[in-house]
Length: 118
Image (cartoon, rainbow, N blue to C red):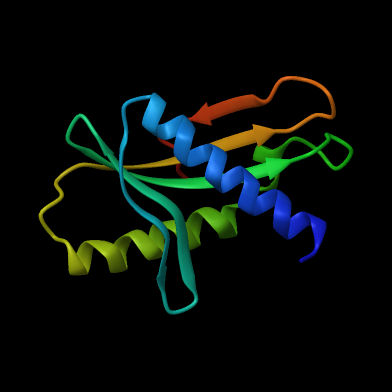
């Protein structure tokens, strides 16, 4: 497995732990519908969260959150529409980004960006 793929898998596992510690109830990880994917779908305080996770080992190519493009947000929104077709009971939803930095020999940094939109 390529290093960037392993970094992504490590980040997604860390993201699940972070979300749980922050009081989220994780409903799905890596939920797929066709070509669309949502890294984490979780509930907290009656709100359904669609969470995009980005992980980087260094800032050489920018911070992890910098790689969440408008196209990625549109895909996240499109995936949410498909999810809500299957599970229409949710009244309130939110799109979030969880950026994780894994600097060498330094503490892990989490940056949770709530309620992103285009």
